[in-house]
Length: 395
Ligand code: ADP
Image (cartoon, helix red, strand yellow):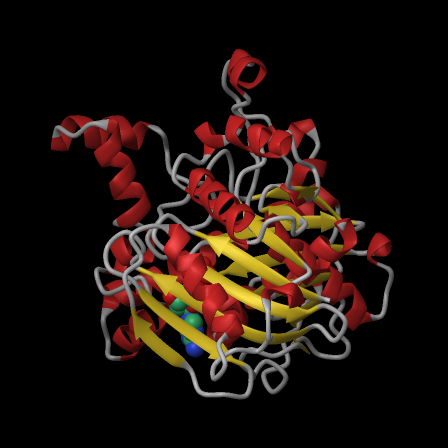
C-alpha cells in the first residue's frame, strides 16, 4: 500500500509517498515559506526535481499542492488520491501520554494538545498538518508517530531532574527525549547488521545532525537519552547550547539586561558550534576554517567531540557495558573525521576504528576492525520509512 508521510513544521512541510511493500520512495518533497509566500520542491522517483513558487498562505494550500503534484499528469506518481492508503504524521511531543504510535482520532488530537505546553512551536504545527489532511483526504486512516515515544521506557532515575518533585508530579517536568524514531530505527538496523537479536545488545546511538542527541539502547529499549524536557538539553548542536550551568541564564539576564525569551533565543539560535566558532552552524564550514588555521574553529570541533565522548562514557556506565557505538544523521553519516576522533577516546574499551572501513559517506558499514571488542558503525537514519512502517502496523 502507499503511505503518505508528513512532517509538518510551523512554516515548512516535508513529505514522502512510500510504497510500503517494497519500501521504495515514489516521490518526496518540501514546502517552504508557508504563510510568507511559498515554494514547493517536488521530486518524483526517477524524474527531475521540480521547484515552483506558489502562494501558500496556510498549510491547507501547501498540502493541497502536494496532493496535486502527486496526482499530476506529468509530475505525478499516482493517478488518483484513492491510491494513498494511509497517512503517517511525524509528531514531536507526546509527553507521558504516548509510549507508542497512535491512530489519529478526535480523542488522540485532544491528548496531543495537552502536550502542547512542552513543545509550543512544534506540536501545534504538526496538528495543523493532521487537521488539513483530515479535511483534504477524508476517511483515510492516519497515524501519529512521536519523537518522544521510544524514550518512554526510560526508568525514573534517568528521567527525573533534581528539582522539587512537585514540578514532575503537577506539571510533568522531566526528561522526555527526542529523535526517538531515528534512534529506534538505527538501533534495529544495527542489530540486523550485526546479525544478533536486539534483546542481547547494548547499543549507543549518536544522532549527530543539526539537532543532536545520544541514546543508550539496552535490549532494544531506550534507557537514557541526552535531550530532556525540550530539545535544548544535551550535546552541543548546530545552534543550540546543549547542557550549561543554569546559573549562566541569570548571568546573561543581568549582564545583557535581557528577559527569558531573549535568553532562550540566544541558547537555541545563537549558541552551539555557531556561537562557539563564530563561523557557521555547518560542520563543513567549520572544518574548512579549521584546516585554514582558524584556532577557534579547531577548538569548536574538539569541544563538540569531547561532549559527545562524555555522554558515550556515561551511557557505557549506565548500561554496564556497550556492544556497539553507532553514528547517524548529517554529521554522523558523512564525517569520517568526527567519527574517528570520537572513537579514538574509547581504546580502553577495546574499540579500534578501521580507517579504511571508516572512509565512507552516507552508507551502512561496520567501521571498527574485525577484532574490535566494541563495534562502531555508520547507519543512515530513515525516519520516514520508520513512520511508514508504524503506520502500516497500526492500521
Ligand atoms: P537536521 O537536524 O536538520 O535534520 P541533518 O541530520 O540533515 O540535520 O544534519 C545536517 C548537518 O550535518 C549539517 O549542518 C552539517 O553540519 C552536517 N553535515 C552534512 N554533511 C556533512 C559532511 N559531508 N561533512 C561534515 N558535516 C556534514
